[in-house]
Length: 236
Ligand code: OGA
Ligand code: MN
Image (cartoon, rainbow, N blue to C red; front, side):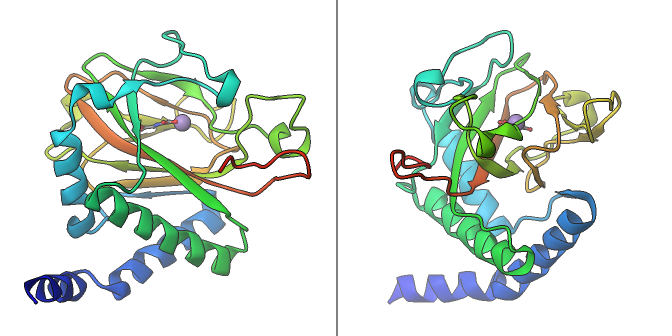
């Protein structure tokens, strides 16, 4: 009984209407620019438990992040030094996040006809001084010639959610989103609690600058289904 009351209270304070408003803004931004930066826009009822969860996690639950998938997974201190933990829905906060991402996926498929098939995401922890050098999350050849470039991912849309209350300019750790390979200035995003960034994975090089304090985020990717008769992708 008390559970039911709590669930209703959650729905009242943070219901479908506010999700749809945010989803509509994201869809409009993506159509116009190919990316969306939404400062402190995520509902507190979703972000606060995610923050509490990531704070409660033991260091051993994170592992050094790699580059590429499957046999192509390599660790490279040169490119990135952060640690990650994949979100599988075994915690209530993680499950709520996956459900929200699923709702957004269906919305974007309906409005923008993106054909997004699946979603994967992980928590990331950057200790002071950690970084992720300029990179792209996917490459144009991935979908066309999968064997020519086996470190592929069929990632279409990248999504970052920041989990750092009270982040200030002198803490550093900005995401820099570049509009193309020639762009040297980019757009800096402060990794402040509840800020959401979404961009087309193939289009935008980006990097994470070193931070002065621990920096927590979720990074996620919507993927298309590029299975063929002899290969199931994304892996089940
Ligand atoms: C990534 C990434 C950006 C960020 O994990 O691929 O680019 O701001 N993260 O954490
Ligand atoms: Mn990235």
